[in-house]
Structures are given as C-alpha cells and as structure tokens.
Amino acid sequence: MSAAITIVRAGPLTTIQDEGRHGLLASGISASGPMDAAGFAHAAELVGVDARGGIEFTTAGLELAVTGGACRIGWAGGAFTARHNGEPVNWPGAAQLETGDRLGITPGPAGNYGYLRFDRDLEVPAVLGSLATSSRAQLGGLAGQALQAGDRLVLGNSATGQPRRHPPAPVPADNSFRVIWGIHADLFSPQARQAFVAGRFDVTAQMDRMGVRLRDTAGAFAGAGALSLVSDAIVPGDIQILGDGTPIVLMRDHQPTGGYPRIATIISADLDRFAQQRPGTAIAFQPVSVEHAHRLVRGETV
Amino acid sequence: MNDAGLPLPKPTIMPLGDAALLVRFATALTPEANSAAVALAQALGGDRVPGVVEIVPNLVSVLVRYDPLRTDPAQLAGELRLRLARLDSAGTSGTQHRIETRFGGAEGPDLDEVAGLLGLTAAEFVQAHNRAPLRVLATGFAPGFVYCGFHPPELVLPRRTTVRRAVPPGSVLFAAGQTAIAATEIPTGWHVILRSGCGRPNAAGSG
Image (cartoon, rainbow over all chains, first blue to last red; front, side, top):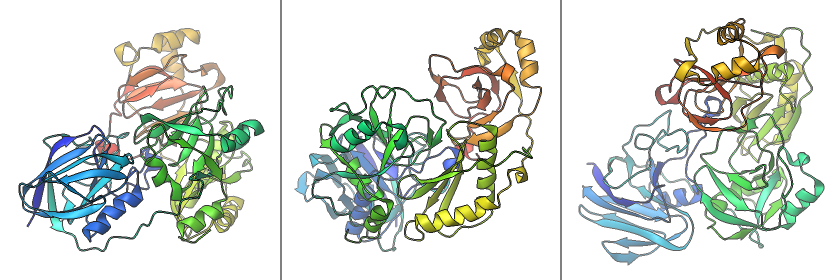
C-alpha cells in the first residue's frame, strides 16, 4: 500500500535529495546530495529503514499533510521545532502519521538544513541514476525544481534496507574547521596564508546549495588581487577567493570547474557541520594533513 | 586528432581535498598540457585503478577521485606515476563531429564586432573560423559544455570586459583562442558569435 504527502508550505530551497549523483563531473554535473549528509542519514536511522530519497528544508520551514495512506517519518539535522498536528514533538525524532495528519517545521535554535525521511521510497523518477535535486543543473527531484506548496509526493514501496550509520565526526575543542591546503595555496603570500589560519571569518546570509560566502573580517585577503588561472576541477569544501578578496566555500551543488584561486578545502568530516553554521557565526580554519582527515573518515580518534 | 611528437610535460600530483588527487601538467593552457591531460584520462578510463571512483579530465589536469576507505594518496600516486611513465599523448583517439550552426544576427550578436576587431568581414571571419577542425579540449564547466581549440594566433581575442548574465542554450562562444559551445543557459564573458543546434540535451546527458 502506498501513501501520499502534500506540501502545504515550503521555503524556497526545499528539495528532494538522496546520496547524490556521483560520477558525472566530466559531463558538467556536480553530485548534489544533502548539505548535511550525517543529518540526512540520522533521519533514516530514526525511521528505522533506509528508504530512497528524503526532503531537505531550510530555516524557512516546511509544512506537509499526509493525504493518503499512512507512513512513518523521521526528522533530524540541525535543531528545528517540529509539531505533529500542532503538538510540539522532540527534535530529532520520528512518528507514525495517518491520513489527514500534519507535520510542521519551524526554525529552532541551530542549523540551516533539516531532513525528513520516510519508511517508503519517494516515487519520483531517477535522473541519471539519482533523485537528488541539482539547483545548478536543474535536474532531479520534481522536474529539477525546489518543492512548493501544492506538490504531492507518492511514497511507494516499503523499504527494508537497514539505515547506514553515519555518526558525525568529533568536533575539535576550539570548534574550528579543518582544511587541506588548496591547489593554489602556493599562489598566496605567506602573510595571507598565515592570516587565513589565524583569522576569523563570518558566515554571511549569502548562502545556498552552491556556496557560502564568508566575510573576511580581518582582511586576510585584502589586496590579494585577481589572478588569471586556467579553470580547474572543484570539489565540495573548496574555499575560493574572489578578485575582491571575498572567500566562498563551494558546497554540494558547486560548479564543476572554476578559475578563482583556492586556498584550502574543508575536510569531508567537517563539511556537514560547516553547512549548518548560521549567518553571523565566526569560524576559524585549521590546516591538517590528508592522513589526519582520513583517520576522521575511518572514525578513529585522532 | 592527436598531437604526435609533442613531449609530455612533467606533471605535479597534489591532493585536492581528502578524497581526490589532481594530476596537473601545467599552470597555463598549452596544447601539450591539454593533450597530456586527455591522454592520461583516456588511459585511466580503460584501466580500473583500485579505490578510484571518478576520473575527470580538465583543460590541463586530471582529477582522480578516490575512496579513502579503499586506497590512500601515497599508494594511488604510485599507481598514477606508473601509468604516467608509459603515457603517450600521441596515442589518444577521437571522433570528428560536424556541428550545424547559424551565424550572426540575433543568434550571434558579437559576430560583427569580433570580425572587426580581427580586421575581417563577418564572412571572412566565418571562413577563417571554420577552416580547420578544432579539438575538444575539455568538458565539465556546465552540462554539455565543450571547450574547443586551438585557433591560430591571428584568431585570438581576449574575453569581453563585461559578463552577460545568461546566454541561451546552443550559443557558440569565442575567446582566448578557443571556441566553446554552451548546451545550457550560462553566464559568460565570452563573445557570442553563432548558434548551434546543440541545445539542452535530454537531462543534460552526454559530455
């Protein structure tokens, strides 16, 4: 038996995601996938099964109604406020919803992205092997677009796969974000590199699935000047410095190649946590070795 | 097309984040570095290196994405050096494609200006532009986008000083000794000279 949900209210960046559309960079398509992969996985753990696809929402919130059948929904990622038929429920959490039930999400104390996962597969067509909505290539999800009020989603086959554990990596005591020096780090002056490590950068409100613009409060890159570079491959977490000195952290819907110099790349273990930093948060970067980053990927204590 | 006889530039292998290595043949766009990148990507594509999950040729480099749980950068760099040692950029193979285009007018608003800057009439420019086949230098900037080159020195122009916020799918772009085709709507600072039939492909499929 299938179920259906209808979106009653959605912020502008509410999208369907899965683990991502990997392997298509040469075709000009970055992988997309959840901004906070650990949060996405956690919501499935709370459901108890690993069903295909899920909904990513932002601090603009989300409200949906079950308009057919019944389903179990899990929610996680950041710290939002959730209401089941108007009654506050725990975050993160999960519940069984019946026909006519409503789930409402409003911003809570922390985080930019939250996730809903279900006990059944989201019935939307896979495009190039994935359900993930790419805001850049405008494919995946529902016709390549963000979800909006009135959209109806069918939940089809019951899923049985066990959710994969995806525990968040341990956070350094100073709350910094660990980076590998970038492919153009040698083009920056020693003073700029030192200021990048010593300084603080404010997360700004200019953020979306493609990138997060930072404010260089200490002027680490003031007067760095525009460099003329050959376009080269980009990976999520790359920190590029624009000609005016503005740092941008490139995220899941990043452009596949780019010509701005990249000073460093946020490590895989810290990218989910970075995505959840709200505008106004001051952050610091800490260079580590690739080996160190891999110990974190393997879940080893460092 | 190949570039037989060109010496292979010495590459640098460097980490790009914690799940990829970049094999970079130069820091400036040269025919030698581009051919080497294409040749390495072709060689790696036919040769499953353990732990490698994606191979992406760029203008002068190859991105090699790997699974950190299945290989490590030192081991992978060793595998890459083995393959680089026997790489022959003359060995790349390709297919020639003919692209139907419409020149100038609303389809190519910069055609007359580009021809003028090069001291040619529009018809002379079109003839010079189409005189020899171009090689696809790289893909990947956007779905279906291809960089083609190289034009001879007398057909080299810098980019426009201003960026157009969007040019339509199929636009043929010209700058920096290259011609590029945009298959999707993109912003660009390149000159728009023609329109091809290469509109947005189904689901932005092939590269």
